Length: 253
Image 1 (tube, one colour):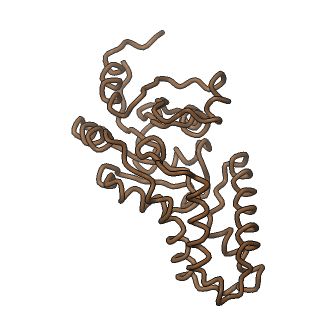
Image 2 (image 1 turned 120 degrees about the vertical axis):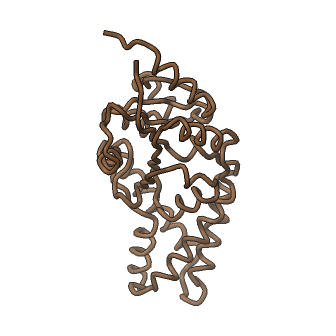
Image 3 (image 1 turned 120 degrees about the horizontal axis):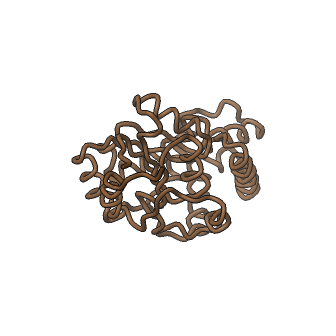
């Protein structure tokens, strides 16, 4: 039999889904960023500024996916502003600009229809729940969690932006395990990404459950023959049944 005390969830494409067109969303988000930075009054070169900002984000994103260290959007933005002659740009205004930028994409994220019933059922069955999200901005994740109405279900929420490290680095899983006092063998990770969620969980000693409803992505296809989850479900609604089956099935060996 295999039973768990703690269930750890991914956020994007696991508990919530995106319904927008990313290029169009990025374009609107960039426009909001420029406006709220006060680009005109600062005499920032709008298109050149955005081109450089997005190029740096792309470079950091590539690096973080190999180093598994998180570089936040705020860090990238403040560094660029400093190089352009605005090292003392007010923090409150920078955060307001980022909030306006992320509000564009936040409007396209929605909770899966089975997320609240499933989380409620799991809590009622006695499971402890936590969440680990890879993201370049902690405030963005917190806003998405509140928009979905799922914060009350979780004992602990960790973002890579706040922790400074990303899944699949096993240390981000250990942060949760140690804080909640749960052994890795008594925890399971549920996520849609083979490289970050499944491999990360396995490296940290957690049972791995791959949710495939929104997992048809290039990165997953590239890892499909290499990374094998311990269990697979299509939807969140299937999770309670899977956990029940695992608790009743004899373990091999």
